[in-house]
Amino acid sequence: MKVTLVGAGPGGKGLLTLRGLEMLQTADVVLHDRFVSEDILDLISDFAEKIDVGKYAGNHHVPQDEINNLLLEKARQGKNIVRLKGGDPFVFGRGGEELELLAENDIPFEVVPGVTSAIAAATYAGIPVTHRGCASSFHVITAHAKNNEALDIDFDALVKLNGTLVFLMGVAVINDICDRCIAAGMDKDIPAAIVENAAANSQRKFLGTLAALPEIAHANNVQSPAVIIIGKVCEFSERYDWFSKKPLHSKRIIVSRIIPGSSKLPDSLREQGFDVIELPCLRIAPLISPGCVLGMRLESIKGYSWLVFTSGAGVNIFFDYLIESGIDIRELSGLKIACVGVETEREVKKRGIAADYIPTEYHGAALATGLTGLVRKGEKVFIARAKDGDTDLTHILAEAGVLFDDVPVYEKVGNIKNISVDAVNAVIKNDFDIAAFTSPSGVKGFAEIAAHLDFGKIKALCIGEKTAAEARAYGMEVYVSKEATVKSMVDAVNCCQIS
Ligand code: SAH
Image (cartoon, rainbow, N blue to C red):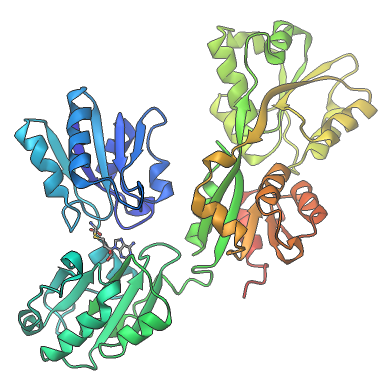
């Protein structure tokens, strides 16, 4: 039984600490803030209870004392609890208050520091918070004023320090901050910056003099969360900018995909600078109930000569089923194995199998054509794949007179309820530059949500010809990757004309 306050860092999972990750993966309960990013929430174990305490209940956050009580109550049930907070838990995060009740009641706790936005915002804007000969200290200040009262900050003292000033929670009072710095004697032409959504690919940064910054922020409609940085060090921002210089920085891409599935594509696109919005339209539902087709066909597995897989999910569900049903793996001995696609091959390898046949092109037709030359007369093929899979595979085999059974091991079902409101809104409002698809069903799932959009104006990045054909059928402007790999998709993205 323990409560751990974990700092989630300013945004994506890359800036979460290893200790934080360990705590997240072993927690029974996770209480998180509203702005903790989706990719961090995805790291939480499926078995943990997730409670969003940042949710608005009739326009109010869950009140602080309710959060404190909840922590105590769950701890008393003997659970391991993680309280996940943005940035660092103690930097304007009320972390101390959350420990108070626990300390009073002798509940063990730990605090895992996080990368605070106060520093990350500067770093991701190319601003070194200290610099030799320029700033030998930096000061982090909250600009949050109680009940809209005037800011209770000693600006005279701050200005005398001659260091870098970093204001959090300052968007609404930026005029006040800058005016009062100037009134306290700071040079009005000193460089300043405001960094919105720091460390995310949607980050925006604006530079200006101290006097001009408020106007610039208003003109660009800068919203919270943002950090205001004032000081000479801001003059390095352009020169040391390593982040927003990426050519695809802050271009928005929707990735319509199936879960569980390879999450490599979103991460690889993020590396390129894309602001990735994941749209998990479909989820995989194993067809492994009592009396299922898979179970029935496995009873006569000795009657087959070839076992065929067309997806990583198919491989995993098939082998997990064998284990769960107590079927000895040696029942498969003598079977030749064929598979198609990089992910399928990887999952087959993980099971200790070197496939007998893998076509060089990653589609069902190539697999079928190859198999027709390999399967001998009288031999039978067991195809373990999705229900209603690609018909090219079965047509080609049937036409060549190859005997086979098409065994559905899973189906793809709608997952709309689990898609975040922000993701759905980005689609509905057409607030994206490209949509990426890794399967024809991903195209369909997207099209359902985007039904009212003009598909002719949508740039669709597709993993292979089948997916491309589906996108073309909707009239989308299609870009196809040369190979069915994430790397090839990332290469193809550079062909899309994004303005
Ligand atoms: N504990 C947090 C700060 C909480 S106060 C931390 O250490 O970062 C909330 C303020 O933090 C916001 O108003 C904003 O000023 C800043 N902030 C948090 N995340 C941010 C982000 N990704 N980009 C810019 N500012 C951020």
